[in-house]
Structure formats: C-alpha cells, structure tokens
Image (cartoon, rainbow, N blue to C red; front, side, top):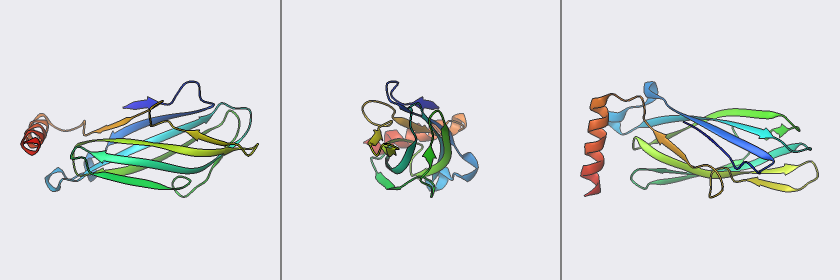
Length: 149
C-alpha cells in the first residue's frame, strides 16, 4: 500500500508498506511490517530532517510511541529538488494496525518545518498482513470476532 503527504507542502512524503511474511509468526501473534519512506524536498532551500514521531497502534488498541532524532541513525540534509529514502519496520501483535506521526525539519534559513504527513492533513498508514492464505484470513477474522466480545 502506498500513501503520500499533503500536496500543498514544500516537503512531500510517500510511504509504502509491506507485510514481511518470512519474519512473522502468526501462531505467536508476531506480525512484522516494513515501510519504505520517500521524502522529496520541493522547496528552494535545503532541509535537515531533525526528528520523527510515530504512534503505532494494533487492532487491540495497544499503542507504541517511537520518537527521536533523525531516522535510521541519520539526520539527512535534503537539498532543493532532492529525495531521501529509508526503510524501517514495526512488529505488531495483530495482523492489522495503523501508524500516525510526523517529521520535523529545519530549512537552511533556520525555519522549522513540520511535515505532518501522517496526521489530520495527510497520511494514515494501515498495516495489513496481505499475503496471508484464505484460511489464515478466516482464522484472523474469527480471532477478531472472539476478542471483540
């Protein structure tokens, strides 16, 4: 699934999510997802990615907050017209979940920019274990039904 940020922002963010079946263990309620993020700077000056914030929520309502400096150990400087890409992951206890969050950037004029690509004005990422078999989907549907009562 691919999603992208607010069209009017000088910084565009798109996210593609993947279910990682080979690392998941549904029988242990461990569902592994990867997400690839592309950040494109459409402004006329460089922007430094200072921090990120994610709220990851599984189908049970369990929330995990992830925040800190940069992304994947880097605080990249994205020049005018340039793109920065990275891939990371999340492990959920359920086969469905969501991610919401934002990035904070500083442009070369020392102005803070917040690319809130994953809240109200942009993207909500839905994580789904899409490569499951029909029987696994039926088992998951039954599990959700049983746990909602």
